[in-house]
Each structure stands twice: as C-alpha cells, then as structure tokens.
Length: 569
Image 1 (cartoon, helix red, strand yellow):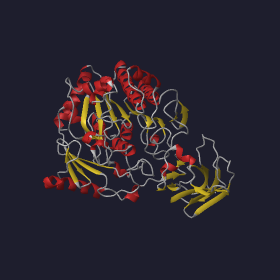
Image 2 (cartoon, one colour):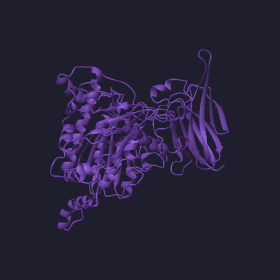
Image 3 (tube, one colour):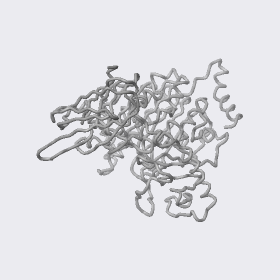
Image 4 (cartoon, helix red, strand yellow):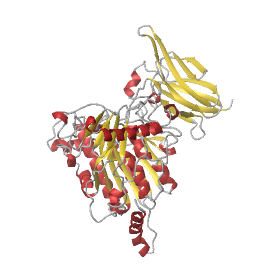
C-alpha cells in the first residue's frame, strides 16, 4: 500500500472519533479456520445438498477470495497462516513424525498482537506442538482451550475423545465439555469476545470439524432428514458443515449485537482442499484422487468482512492469494510493522480497492508429507492462472481447470521464470537437520512434559488411538535436556487418564549413552525409571518387551512418556 493510501485508510478510520474528541478503538480480529472442508462444500459454491446460508451471505456481503490457496495438510497450513511464512521454512511438511511442530524461531501473529496490547485466545485445534516452547500458551495466546493432535481421538488427544462431550485442555488443565465440539468451541470463542470487548482482542476459533472421525450432529441431522436428505455415509459430514454454518451465524450476530461488527476484521477459511469433494462437475467426469501437487488439494474458500472499510461491496476477488497472506493482512490492518522475512503479502489493497498489489506475485506450495524434504517433490508454483507442477508440467487453469493438459513446451520463458522462483526459494531454506524441533526436558517453564508417539522423528509414526492396541511400533524423540540433573521417566502404553495395562514384562529407556531397565508385570499401568543426565541434545527411545508363550517375543515403544525433572543429584 502506498503512503497516500495508508494515510487515507488511517484518516478515514479515525476521523469520526477525532471529531468527537475520542481516541479510536484499536480494531479487533476474529479468525475462524474450518478443518478439511472442501471449497465446493458451500451452497454458494455449487453444492447440491448442504445449505450454508450464513457463509453464503458472508461471501456475498463481505469479500470472497476465489483463487485462494493453502498447503494441503493441517500443520503446514496452520504454520503458514500464523506466521506468514512458507511452512518448509519452519521444517513443517507433515502432520506427524516430529515435523508438525512449529519451530521456536518462528513468531506467530498472536505474539505480535499480544506485544501490541491485544488479548489473545485460541479455541479448538492447534496441531503445532505442545509443551514448552511449542504450546500455544508460549506462542502468544493468553487463553488456550484446545484438543490434542490433528483431530479428536488422535494419539495426542485426551483418551476416548470424540466430537460429543469431549475433554479439552483449558489453560493447561483438562476440562470436560458438554455438547458437540463445534458448538462448544464457538461458545468459548464468543465468551472470550464478550469478556474482552472493552479491549482489543484476537480470537482464533479452529474447529476439528469436518476432519475425521466424523460424527452426526444430533439436531442438524434431524433437520437434514426432515429436508429429505437420505441416510448415507456422507450425512455426518453434511451435518457438521451445516453446524459450522450455524455457528458462524451465531458469531456474526454476537459481534453485531455488542456493537463490534464495524470494528472487527472477521476471516473465515478452510485449511486445505479435499480433492474437489462436493464439486458439481469433476475432472474427466469423475472424482479424482491424485498427488497433493494439484489445485484440488490447495484451493480453499476464504472470506473476510469489515463493514466500516467501504460503502460498496468489492465483490469476489479472483487475484491469486494464499494462507501466507493472513498474517501480513492482520498486521497491517492493526497498524503493526510487518517483518521483512514474510512470504505472504497484505490483502488490504484488494480489500480497500486502493493501494499497491503485486499482480506479478508467485505462490509456492510444497508439502512432501514425508520426514525428509526433497527438491521439486510435490510442488506447485502458482502465477496468476498458471501452475508449474514438480517442475515437469505447466497448466493454464483458466482454460484447463482440471490440470489435464500439459503445455510446458509451449511456454519456455514462463516455465524458466517459475523454475527460477522455486530455485531461489529452495536455496533460501535452512538445512533440514537444523529445523527438527527438539522436545525440551527440564525447562523451568515446563518441568513436567508428556511425550507421545505421534512425534517420533525416527521410526514409526502412530497417530490414532487405535494404534495403541498394537505391540509393534517403535521410534525415537529428539529431546533437549535443558539442565543437568535427575529425570523421572514414566513409560506407558496408554495415557494416564486411560489407566490401562502396558502388557509388558520389561521396560527400557535409552537417552544417548545412558539407559535403564526395569521388570514389570503385564497388568501394570506404567513403568518408572530414573536417569542422571547432562544437559544436551539426545535421541530418546523407549522399549517395552513382552515374552508370551503363545505370541512369542513382542517389542514396541512406549506410546506415552511422562518426564519430570527431579533436581540436582
């Protein structure tokens, strides 16, 4: 945005207050992120069954970005959204396996806003690491009400959770909720807004809906059936989507009722594409399911509203935009200085219809979903309506939305420019081994931590609670022992709240050159060992062994390890 445009934006926002002799209130920000909802699972985008009147109205009366893109998986998308930087810069390119944790060197938009005096709260899905220094309470959020992992009932989540009456972590303590997860989280977000309405606030509501496991919302399902929607395996998804729409409506009504709608930037988006699920016309006449390099895994809906900005509706915006643009947009909207290391750019020139927008911008989406990254693997370089995929194919989505016709040989200059853009990005990345985030043991900020097998960075990567029944998975955590001293390791097959047996006769813990073993009863719930450790970085491995006359020798890792610092020896 030019100086003149910025000055006009500032004066038009504060002039009414100056004339009344009042200081203008800082703007508020509400960010709603829906999990795994397709761009086409809105009635306004052509879905034939779901009805989403409040989201449709938001798209109609606010701003609807029709060429908006996100990394194709949960953790990378959240990292890009909260930092304004490509997720690979933080070492995130998966949802498990030790590389779904936001590196401590990254600064979130919540941290910027908190430093500026904002009250900050997150409600729902985090999926960027827990314990110090990765937990949202260390990443700029004053109030934290979240579930573990990437969806309810994953390994990191409270044992036995589903979308109904789930147990959440509220400021470090487990609390039982009543009701459907989406309703509960919007209740919490609205309550946070109500309690902080006299101060500027940043409220992030990130639902686990409509990520699997899906569950029928009781009341909405009745509404769907009454409308003639037949029973099917899609009914749960439909009910969860319409429940999201109901809650977005509740949020909009609340902001209006307390007089904050005209001073609040509201952003509602989905976190990833879902293979064109719900699209009225599929590629080549059928639903596709191919690599994550293509637009069906990247394109998401994104809507914004701030009624005081303009007297007229700017209408749909078809400029190429992405999840990395969220943070710079919020920072500029709130009058904060944007860091120079951001990959995204502010959307305010598009929202205001004035200022400087870089129409030549290029957007890179790469998410290998493996422990190791590889050059030109699962890459889309986007420029206007062009897509360079893996450096091998070029598509013009204006003429070929399905990305079926490779025209790379017809456009050598454009191909070279897009390849050069990617090469510069790839060469700017820190070495991959420097980006693996260690789990901190013995940190004064968090002297007792819980580790889980989802975060093994070597070996297997179990991620659902159904995995706990198996006695086969093994792996290692990368840990940082913060201070010398004695550490207690409590090894469990199931988390503490489950109180279920380990089923092993021997338990072992290894950390660097140190190790300890203890014999156990199969009926025991845990095995406790202690190690005297020196500060440093190590691999942590645990092994359960069971010798059974019928099943033979079984060896697997402790899926949960509770580590406590006991002090100097």
